[in-house]
Length: 303
Image (cartoon, rainbow, N blue to C red; front, side, top):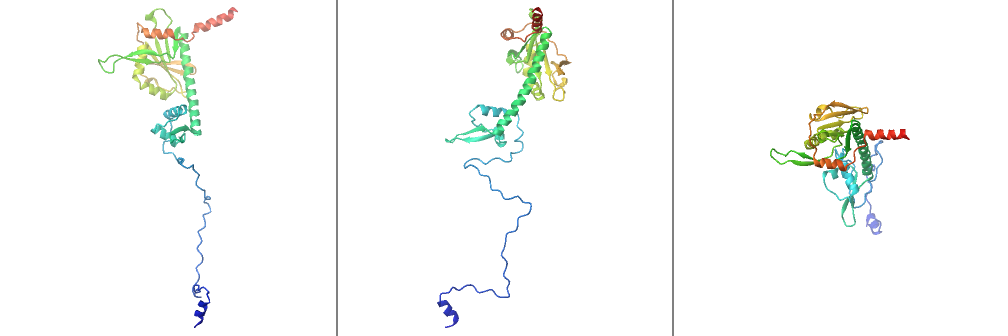
């Protein structure tokens, strides 16, 4: 029995044979080093189980939100937040202004995020600024009418008569809400000469109004003259040109605190004011007139 058999019987393990002395041993394989400028590895963000993943990059155009989006945000903020599942809601969700909330019963509602609250506050500031400029110009126009010896009203709702949609159709009725409505201070109805003033301080609002012929026809039915009063933008330029306004309407430009006539209105005699308009004027409070201001000054001198 040779030496190999004796070694096996002794219970010693038989290992691999040693490498041949003429073959080199390969070095261990190591991973390549990371480039010098790479950022360190970051673990993926933890997301609540069952919650939708956050939207990192909104689709193109999702950040261009308009008045319809701001109106929907106000509606969601005032309501229970039931989803409408339309394109406006998709834009607001993608922009991160709305978030979906699922109740324990599985009902999904919407709520405004912090970004949505901030966006709503910014649009509110812009709207209040535009409204204050509009109201200031309406007040100026009404005061000018009273200084001209007229009776002026603001915010009236008057019923106007419109022609039929097609030739031969019955006349239609429409509710008109002119910014300023004024008549002459007279007891003779034929001399009343009603005038309508429509005030615009925003160009988008002006262009939208010009695309409504029924609204303009209602003003022309109520007044013997219809005027558009145009404000100026931040650079002091009028928001519209007289050529953009229909020829049957006059144009006033509010510049440097004055109302400048850019084009006179076409005067149409109205021998009789409808009874419904008279009733609306009787129920409303006119703007305090120039005579009332003078009476206050006279009372101070009498004391």
